[in-house]
Length: 144
Image 1 (cartoon, helix red, strand yellow):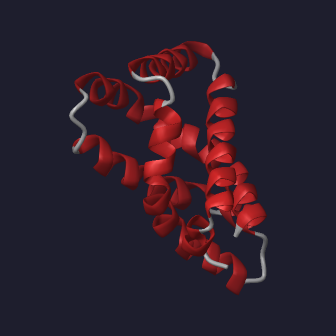
Image 2 (image 1 turned 30 degrees about the vertical axis):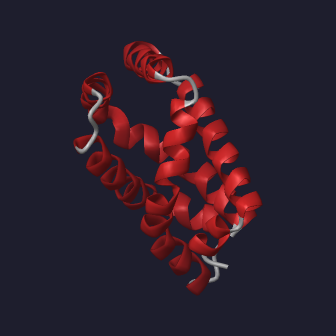
């Protein structure tokens, strides 16, 4: 089953959304130091703009994320690897594919505070997203 098929199943889509939101919360919680303070502050700002904002964004972006991630999932399957292992071995490429989606979306956002927070955090985003990639691979394995 490919990622788009999984997203067409409402129960799987809800589980994937919950899994990704938990992963985001965990990754934000792991942040340390000055950059960690900036990430946590930005995350709180985003959460404060609208309750449930992150969950809503995940739901909206899932189809675009799925399209960006499907080639990596297919490569893992073709090579006989687990998705989590393949994603872990290709963290940078997977993270860049995800960030290309969010970069495009932020550009079209009408929320100035969201754009500003994203711009401030974008420099460290690749490292942070790379950290989450193996967990994302496990979520995909579980549901697709």
